[in-house]
Image (cartoon, rainbow, N blue to C red; front, top):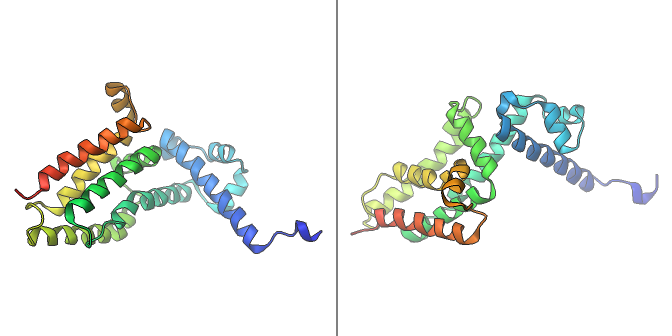
Length: 212
């Protein structure tokens, strides 16, 4: 083997990472279309360009692959909330959170829909993540909102209900994208429509929590 043909550990690591990501991307596409029960590993392997044997080397079962996809979605879904900081002024922080959540709906619609499907089924494979890391993060960010309310910087709103309202209004554009397009003739890929959606959701929520 020539020196140029030697694969360094760094290159091998990148190749493995790229292959796993290809599998996860293909799995997201198939799971979001057919659900866990309607998806076959052969479909995922073919779409990702690997053999089924190779797929099973990285993910030993369909359930393990499904959970890995859901955990990746959860990371994407929670990234905007993790960026929520106490040092920002309340209205600026909440407006930015809404914008980031709308970007997730625009950029990862399949992920949002698959996550919604899992929630509708009672989240049987994601309960540990929801009651663990998710709850801890929500508790932390809710405490920031409660502090703003107590210090007179926000109207008296329940932090959990505020977060739920933001989730519902922003994720609607991904989870019910077909309905949105049927009614408006537009999607979030239309820059003007995206900005209008962000502006309107921000305005309606901000006006509800602004001090009078």
